[in-house]
Image (tube, rainbow, N blue to C red; front, side):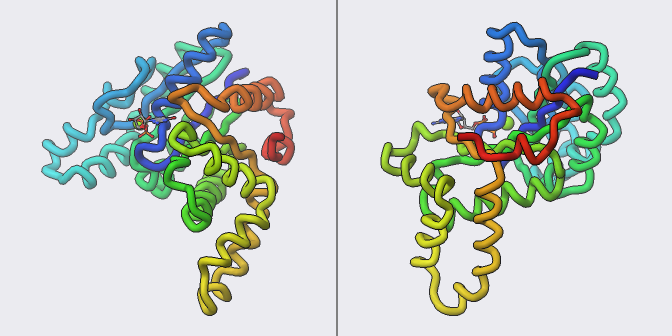
Length: 264
Ligand SMILES: Nc1nc2c(ncn2[C@@H]2O[C@H](COP(=O)(O)OP(=O)(O)O)[C@@H](O)[C@H]2O)c(=O)[nH]1
Ligand SMILES: [Mg+2]
């Protein structure tokens, strides 16, 4: 089937739902067929109208009342319960789209989705046609070398979990000064500058512990696609959309190493 299922993942509040809304708007303007799927059972508000919605099957609130769980336990249980509703969701999706994009918005708390077995199962079952991940983090929380590196670790852990083509977006660049953004862009272009910045903050033993890890950050930065965007002011999104289109058009013949290369 000529569809591209894009799973939008990232920490709570990084802008996953905003990205889905913004990409859906772009697809609409470009007359490219798409379908939006909300998989967040705890969402109270989403900035688009989901075509398929897990909340029609289960909500965190229902689970909280029914099983007398607290908010975190309820979200975990609701995400695990999602597996039971996969056939229904698959049917809804298949009935509504035969080509174009399936944009899947994932639960607010990424660890509940990305790092639990149910999340991996859901992704496997709901990938129709080509699959991919848009991993979104908050650029305003990544301004120093240590915080930037921790986001890269998060991105790589998601990559190793799902092993799908992954675009990594630093969102909310509208909250950065020009100088802060320039510095971040430079860390990606010249990972050595990031490593040097980090080394300055580390002392003796810490340095020995992380030296090997820094090498892996460097290779991640050298081989993965990283974008600096703002869904709020629609900045930097064109190259994300263009690269997604390349993956979509390439279909199954598209070789993973190619589309994971850094875009210049
Ligand atoms: N300043 C700024 N705020 C943003 C941007 N994208 C999203 N937000 C805000 O960040 C908050 C969380 O966004 P949301 O899309 O709900 O995040 P999610 O939890 O990852 O789905 C909301 O208040 C959004 O309005 C952006 O590019 N810039
Ligand atoms: Mg959301």
